[in-house]
Length: 455
Ligand SMILES: Cc1cc2nc3c(=O)[nH]c(=O)nc-3n(C[C@H](O)[C@H](O)[C@H](O)COP(=O)(O)OP(=O)(O)OC[C@H]3O[C@@H](n4cnc5c(N)ncnc54)[C@H](O)[C@@H]3O)c2cc1C
Image 1 (tube, helix red, strand yellow):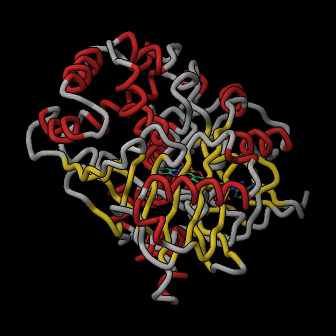
Image 2 (cartoon, rainbow, N blue to C red):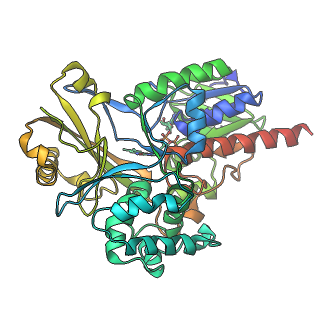
Image 3 (cartoon, helix red, strand yellow):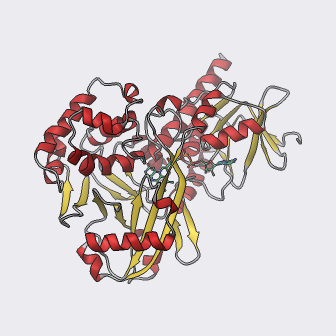
């Protein structure tokens, strides 16, 4: 390996939300920081791909909630706004059996009462659902989420008196989308966190936010500008190959050509599997990273439909008990629709898409379009002009039962080495909020270590 070409106090590897949040926080505390990212833009999984026919298409629709306070704080700093910003939850819910369409809005009332109009009007649920949801709220009181880690979410909901109808019609669409896993496999700890922080928190906690443009433009360039203002040295197209220990006891991040950067501290803000590979190739190891790298992944598939007229009854539509899951009207955000005023863009976001990930693109698009036609009356009058399927096989880790204890905190057994990423112990499922929290937690741990050394 060639001698190190430059030095830096802290190196952050990975320019997703975790790496961006970590680098900014460290720079705010006076660290000299280099951020290394192998891609041509920052943003990690929040990205769009260039399609030869359609231009930029997001790899998957992203949504966040009012309770994602750390993400919102970061986005404010990046001067990035969502296109949709509700003050409290508003959702169009469609019953696939009866085609009943309900536009639901939470009330401006204290927590739990705010959900009354949503639960009372949710298609397929009756007034009894209100009492059932109340039992979940009572069950969550004084119940530490960690104690629920080994319990499957479905069994936990059943133990709290949730009927099969309420589970299928209400909890499944909300929790499968948030946790990206079926309720049988999902840890009740992950489900409980989503319910208590999102749904049962303040009325604004469940308010939806949708990114303002395609994901790569939304996050990458503003993040680069903010990092540069903060004095962070961002190196794009810099693929780390290994992390090793130098003879002087510092950490070295090397690329495949052997060029290296040395630092007192390194934060690996990549996926767990990638972090493990970097350490192993450099002759290092950490049991926490190793355990987390063993967590299975869960896929997300999006089906983009381009039609000659709009057919969705709202900008965000949920279809419980249907493979359609969640649908988004992306016409205002879509470059295709923008350059062709007669084209309307709808995206079907399929979470926990184990089956769909293996289905051929044409077949999946055709099946989903048929379902749209049988669910939304306006779709039967629309003409499908084109479609595109985006698949992310490794979209998130699967928050399976027992997964919470496999997620390490930011510190590792290797002095000077920290980890960040939505897979670390944030308490949140693999989300943008979790990623930002993990980055800030790694930065806080790094700052504390530095202060201890200085004392
Ligand atoms: C299709 C899809 C839909 C989603 N929907 C939502 C949603 O609606 N709401 C929500 O909150 N979350 C959603 N998520 C999850 C969310 O995108 C992620 O949890 C979050 O972006 C993860 O950020 P991160 O920084 O932890 O990791 P990543 O975004 O994976 O960032 C890791 C970075 O490390 C870089 N890297 C890896 N190896 C190296 C190396 N050797 N050298 C240099 N750089 C390297 C990668 O290129 C990447 O940029 C979705 C994810 C997908 C895929």
